[in-house]
Image (cartoon, one colour):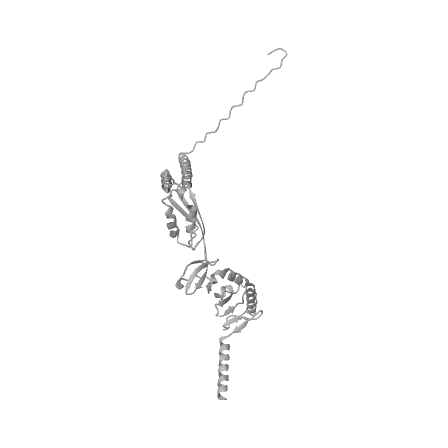
Length: 287
């Protein structure tokens, strides 16, 4: 050290950071290689078809994808409760011989949407070998009698399947042309009169304009046209029924089409009126 000088210190160089080594497991490594090969082959197939080359080349590459271990081996279906899952499997099995990356997902989904019970479907791939189908089904909400046949329909009025009379489920019965498409309106009307809903035997859609409600006690409630008018008429009638028990007393029908009124038609009254008319006619003949 020089006399009278200052001591200088030399800093040690910082150790260089070494990149961490990541070692893939043999299974993961094979999957990565297969996926990479598949991606390259799929891109090549797309290019071949874009250039308009023969489909034989695409099929050959599809065969190569299968040999790489990416063929469809499993079909996983979820969300099926109402319909027969075998019908879905039969459609999906049409893709069983294809390589997974080449499965036409949109085409398969379109085929599934042709089933009445299928409201929506999602089709996807799960590598290395599974085709996954997630279903959204339509749920039966009512029975619809169209002409001389009986059908199950969902809340939107979509016809699901034919039903035998002996196998009728406990669901509201709709009668008349187009009645299935008016189920939502009927449910809104019944929501305004909760006491009537459990007493409803059937509902007839008349002339494409209004409802006749058939009650379990035998009466027919003739409703006016228009959802608002029908709702008001029902509310007033059920309020009167709560006070004076209009249902279950032998009246054949209540016509609620006149605002604020319920015109009753009774078989006994009609019979008495007809007998009076016949008596009057006989009296005229004697004179």
